[in-house]
Length: 246
Length: 388
Image 1 (tube, rainbow over the protein chains, first blue to last red):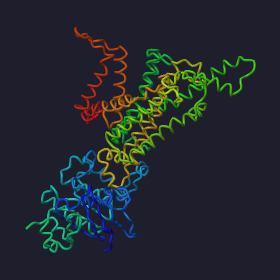
Image 2 (image 1 turned 90 degrees about the vertical axis):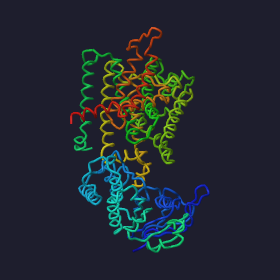
Image 3 (image 1 turned 60 degrees about the vertical axis):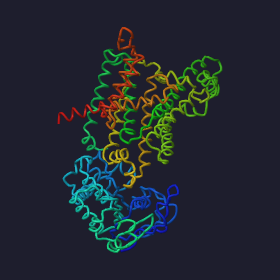
């Protein structure tokens, strides 16, 4: 397991409020990591910084084998570098079919002329079908994404991330609003995805995190409060104090 | 553009067939090549409507498909008109001046000829020299190039500045409106080099075709406009189909998400904005020789707002919807404002449609937006759905 992404000394403040405070974090490839923390701990800002949506005030983020810096890259450049992101609210393109959604996400050249002259290939179609199979969407490929159930939309979004073939996957509250059966399936998808790449899951549901059987990082007030196995983190008195409650 | 593209989009074939039939019928009914049922001025109205349809499908691509509500696309249309108008005016005046000077004993020098043309064209604004803008006006190929280049470059620069700063939604609409208003106000000035509020006139006279009657020229332009509309339709249908169409519609629905998929959204918007601006320029260049005159009022913001109304009434996100909206609204507009519609006498008040047409149009716009967001094009979809 080699280090894929390393953040060091990253800080960002909004109107004087330090959302992220001297945060250092690293993740290897492959690895599954869960991030917990109370509301306002900076979990979403943390993802915003990695994906280029928010520019940090200070600190470094180095990425990949060549340790290139992600600072100064646009969101789309970072995505092309191999960082995929799933939002809290499922965001799929509801007016388009499941197949079109997946086709857009497939790892292919992203320039307008590449896309304009893009020809459907058999490999592409097979890849889409394989991903649909993996995410349980094989029967709904031709349906419009807006007609899917909440859980199916979440899976479609995970499927789109897989289609991007990212090296790092950031997943924000994947289990929110899911039925127990859907949760179980989602757990399985994430664990499988993490076999070949780095996956970071932000989640509130401790039961869900326990099932991921992975290392846990607890954020609080923009810095790391505790890191380690779930039992180690949940027995940390500080974590109990600020997050789990007594 | 391969065979499978047309096979996958039967509506494109249908459209081309209908457009061909329409052109044929108008030709057969025209004064020049047929039974003379349609007057030359009506043929010109139809030809102009085809040009408006062309800019409307461009508007549909930029707004209906890509979600950029541009309220400035008529600026590009007007620039196309001015670009062709400069050549038309120059070449025609050159012919007239050369003829009147040819009676002199000493043949005029080229400088004399130039000065005479300039004072003919610019006398009306009190100038007698060619402004730099007219450098290429003598050359048809160069002015044709200008029809593509000037709207394209303006859209490229404007779009780059706006999209790069992530200006979206209503702010972008206001910005585009400001662009067309600024251009219009600039052109209203006498020293803009384009004859101020007089605009360019006499554009219906085609140099080199002096002996050809207007009835014939009107049919030529009808064919030209129909050809341009057909090609434009195929081009846009191709752009909005397949993966490109997928990405463009995705940008309309959630551009942030598209960014995180790795697409550089700004480049795509710029591509769509510029391509549609160029097509709008071509449409303008075909429109104004049929209208005969262009002046700065043509590119006032209201024109671009009308464009949005046509597309909205026709149904956004369907190319044939944009065509339907344009045809219905412009023909209805010329019927109502041209005195075709009988006045309604209410006893205490008489509704004169020349005044009330805009009110009616406004109400239809509101009604369509509220009750039939699919517009007229939605009716076609319903019929298709009923048959299937």
